[in-house]
Each structure stands twice: as structure tokens, then as C-alpha cells.
Image (tube, rainbow, N blue to C red; front, top):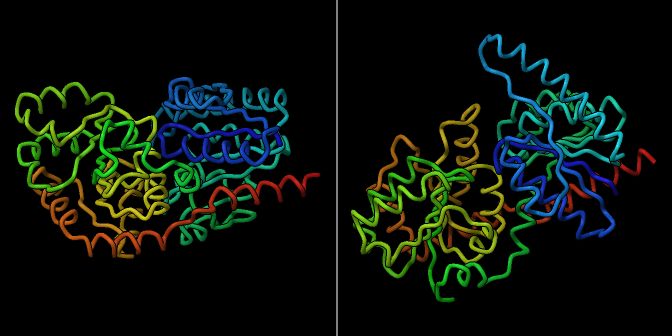
Length: 370
């Protein structure tokens, strides 16, 4: 099968597309992939690193208020659709998969106009604007939360697929994450991560809690700072709490996130949909800190779905401080029974066969075309 993948802007859109592509390759090594994104988005770096051919189009998102910039965006959309049609005619895909972000708009639209079967995947509990727009053109919409299906009333077909990042993380080998960090195989690992780009508020909280980190007994903390915050965070902790670096490892980015997650005991994370798919697949207890800087505050909705199931705790960014985070981590890591109960509740929410569900939908679509 020949597959075009598209999605961009954040890791939450990129990694599900990559996960589907890799799954299809694993099932059939003759699968041919092409990823269409933007040259300025992080997909232009992440996708080639995964060994997937990449092409770029130019497109920007709409402003939520009336603006002359939106007129320019419409023109870029039309130009992007034209460029997408040229790429699609050249590659001749059997199916096009969009995973969100404004780059999906012209690509999936162009595919639909060319009569190529299209599949879009919605990761969040509250659908994004691009996917809502595209749902009337797509042949199939896959959702990560069952309640999201009703929010695509114009879709031809919808199904609950879960998030394919869940399938991907389960392939990681236990022990390799700790080994890559130079930690003992017996280490209890608290993993703190602020999303693919990092989070200033979380960096400030870790700096604040560093001097009292020894209150967390029998655990080592790994903090993924985000590349733009790494040097400043490391320098401030080195100056203000150098002893904390015996119990705290700082990294700018984890290229083997799946392996490190596989070895984690507790996760502190934003509540992007891909992160939650990985957390639930592994049955990990978590403290979720939703980003308030996202469309429709969808990360809080994502987080509350886990909290209501007893699978996670939530700490809103307005309440985030080093003191608050340290207290929550200390209490959880010190209460084995509670951690086990959260882990069991988390595992019940998992959709470990998500990539298979999407693959089945793609095969049905391809079969109808033939």
C-alpha cells in the first residue's frame, strides 16, 4: 500500500502519523510512505529522523478573530492544495491519513478532490478546527475518545480507534530507558515532561522544588526540560541546589521516550492526547498538568477523562508551584497501594490495538476503492 501521512505543528499531531506509518511498514515491508508537512514545523525535523520521506507545503493557521491575515491564509490554503495535488499525483497514494494541524487542511482536501480515500484521526476529546472542517470530505474519521464521535455529524463514517501512540510505546524494551540514562535497573523513576517543546511553568516549578528533592525517597527524577529551557534550567539548579543533581537528571529532549516511559514508575506530564495514550497503554500512574495555551482548553478535558476514572491526578497550571508538585509526587511515590490502584484504573482506559484498528479501516477503504 502507498500511504501519504500529514499532520504538524506539535508532536501530538506528528507522532500518531509516524506511529501509523511504522505499523503499516511492520505489517507489510513493501508499504511506501510519504509525509507532507511544513518546512517550519517540527515535523520537518522529526519525520526525516524516522526515515520517512518528507515533502513540504506552505500553509498557516486561521486567526480566531477577523483579520486581513486570514485572507492571506485562504490564498496559502489554495496554493497549498495545488502543491498537494501535484505531490499526490506524483506519488499516487492508495490512501491519505491526516492527524491534525493546519497542514492537514490542503493535503486532505486535495486528496478528496482527486478521489483518493482519506482517513483523519482526532487525538483529543475536543476536536480541532482543521479536523472538524475536513470531516465532511474524509471517508473515515477515527477518534481517540468514544465521546468525540458525536462531534463529527457530517462525517461519512466514524470509529473509536484510540491513539496509535499506544501501540507504538508497547513495543519498547524494558530496561533500555534506564540504561540510556545511566541508571540502575532497580531505580524507581519519576519522569517529568512538559510536552515536545517544554513548558516554562514546569521548569520554574522544578527549579523551586530542587532544594527539597530529598523528600522524595527511593526515587530518581528525570526532567525533560525542552530544548529552549535546558541550559537556563540546568544553570539555575546548579547554582541554587547543586546537591539536587544527585537525584535529578535533566535532559533537553528524549529521542527514546517510549523506552524511558516503559521504565517509569510515575509520570508528571502535560495532557496531550498522545502522551495520555502512552501513559494508559503502560498503565502508569500520573500527575497531569494541562496546558492552558491550547485550543478550547482541550488538554484539561483530556486530563479530566483520566481523573474521573481514578487513573490520574490533575494539577492546573494556575495552581502549579514547586511546593504543590513536590507534595503530590512525594505522597504518590510513598503510597504503593494508591499507585497500584491508579495503575489498574489507567490500564482499563488503554487501547493497545489502536494501530491495528486504524490499519483495518485503511484496508477496508482501499478494498472499496479497488
